[in-house]
Amino acid sequence: MIDWPLMQIDQQKCVACGNCIPVCPMGAISIDASRGRASVNADECVECYTCFRGMSMEKLNPTLVRGIRRILKAFRLRFDPEPDVCPTSAIIPDELPWPRVVRRAFSDPIVTHESTGVHGRGTEEVKTNDVTGRVGVGEVGYVVEFGRPTVGVRFREIEKMTQALAAIGIEFESKNPVTHMMSDRKTGKLRDDILNEKILSAIVEFKTRIDNVPAVLQRIDEVSRTLDTVVAVGVSTRCTDDGSSALDSVLDQEGFAYARGKTNLGLGRA
Ligand code: SF4
Ligand code: SF4
Image (cartoon, rainbow, N blue to C red):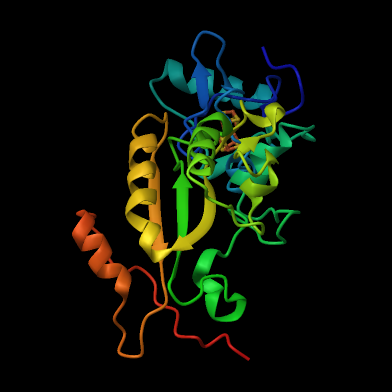
């Protein structure tokens, strides 16, 4: 039982119209038909605020709406509000204490991460490499992404990967929100108090020399098969002047299917 403040549905106001159910990316809202009220599964809710922010809040009287719905039902008719509306403003966000607030920081795209000053997943990855120079010549940058809408991820799953990567000598990118959640960057250990927190998704970043790519990708592949979430991996490197990249042949040789997703043309350079 979770008894701290979180995204809630006011049981006095909810009229069980069901409009908020498809809006939730985690399927965390359901209606108890016997009570005629919707509620949030606090363990599955990632505090993304989509239900609160994504719907218009109207202020109809709940007793009146329930009465109208009951009468119409007797005539096999329905009164349903517009699909993007909570007719009685029943969805109420509350102040989130630590560690619950971590859910929102990693799941609400408009919240800026304090550790990096970037919103969303809190990192610009190598998209800004022309300015940051994070990944140098002969190096490869990695983004390992955990979770997706409808699946999510708990930090304890991410920790299994960060500890496995630390064990093969990986040093994590310091300007990254997951790295900021580590109590020991050398071992990839995350703070104990956040391990059970569930979030929509997160990205772990680091870089190695290009020679290390096969061993690193193999380790990621092994660990990701044991995790209770989905994992996507991006690798990036600097192209030569003719647009080719030494990374392509390494990936081909190791049998990894890939597609060039993003090309940074260097237009951000001063
Ligand atoms: S949209 Fe509002 S009234 Fe309708 S089920 Fe959700 S919380 Fe209840
Ligand atoms: S805050 Fe997000 S995850 Fe939680 S109930 Fe609302 S939409 Fe669903």
